[in-house]
Length: 423
Image 1 (tube, rainbow, N blue to C red):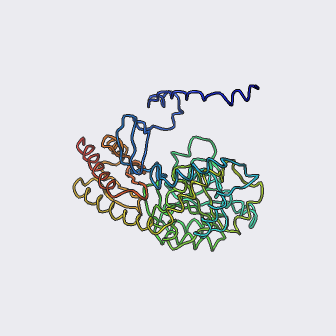
Image 2: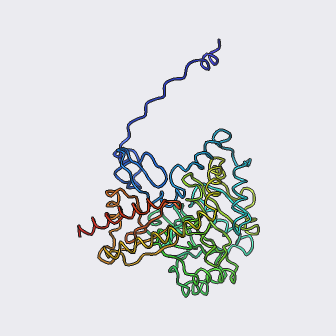
């Protein structure tokens, strides 16, 4: 008997025991660019998460607006399992069925005519910015390369994307930044008009979030967004909408632009698109996409069959009247609950947002202390986020149940009272 056949007929070896894991191992082994919570989540179901000690948390964070259908949604589990049995990966020297099906669904339901798949939001924004510059270079020459963004924007962590973001704390200290990026105040129509008057036809693109997330949960005004569209048209510039967080149903429509009265030239998506499986996408038109001819741009894992199969399942559920109308109904429940809580605790100067993407701006006495409330939330059994040092951010699953909303808001109120009681 050959060694190979002997091995094949041998009984399976016992599964190796798993190494015990503690939170302290992060501080020992990991690059210290994060400061994770003191507990370790090990299981999730819907909008609930359990840690190593079996404690349950209501999830108002959704992995920073990622787990759009909650944890371990049965349709996602099935899609991943089915695809895992057939084809895991092929390079972009070939294509695959899940990628083409997902691309068609995105195109059939948006302004787009072409899709580029990648692995994350920052990759999608990097591709969008490169595409805008390449398109301008091909059509108008090398002098048309400037990008207009907004202060406090966040577009990801690659160097071009983080430079386009308007937060120096994320982009400084890495050497010379990519040239030709300027920033204006968000929702300031006069500043945007002045930037175009100053730079004129050197501007190749404007990149905006329809609602700023990391920058403070600020909804874009129709006047500002429509001015951006009008000025881009007038100056042969492209309008890029970063819908990494605002897209995939989070604000009550498939993408936020659909309720803003504008249509972009390029749109980026990620986070909720994969529901927890890494995937990003850049959507655009035939005319603009032509600037990315073969070899001009690419990515190893973009369009991965596993990711696209899961994203297709996510898309089919989110892009329904039931889910999108449910987001709007949940917005009303959250708004009512937050206003009731604030009537008692009086900690919020403003409650704002769209869909299940809400920001609670702290009053002056608690400015700069948002993370204290997040830690108090952990103590109360609640996962929530910040949007800068002054704003608490809620971004639960689009499908979070009524019971979890009520219980989560109760835990939120406990956390607020704890911090307020400490002065």
